[in-house]
Length: 202
Image (cartoon, rainbow, N blue to C red; front, side, top):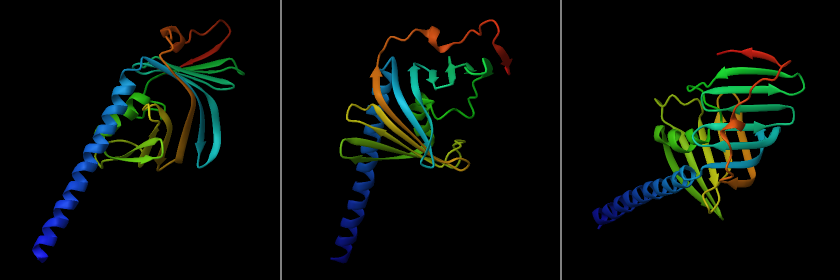
């Protein structure tokens, strides 16, 4: 009888682990399919570090890695290879190459498509929210302890929480999410105008 109970418990435990893995993989696939089929997106965002708001603005993203972050006094733009950071008050622009080794937390494609491959993943459902938990493996080379990606029932990203060893807990909350806006590639580049102080670090 005891042996039967042990076998039952082991079978039940294996089933829970197996189905849990299937569920998380299923959620990951749905999220990836949704994201990869979206040509571009825009959203308002609020960024918090250790629960203190330090950034507010608008993000525009276009496949593959084109990003435009519009803040009150700063405009950050990337075409996936080159970054432009323009300080409007100082009329100063800094140009640099994209650092593949330390991508920004706004690197949505990497967060959704690449980081899970180097991590242990699990899923959780809370009301109408799907949560994908990412914990990097020891040899992953990723520079954060853990991350949680929150999605609505349409698999659109709502929130990102990243726990880092240097900066604590970083939280980004998205709102006014819009897809397939038809953004031109031109908005993901900056050509410095005459009189703009330019520092080129490439």
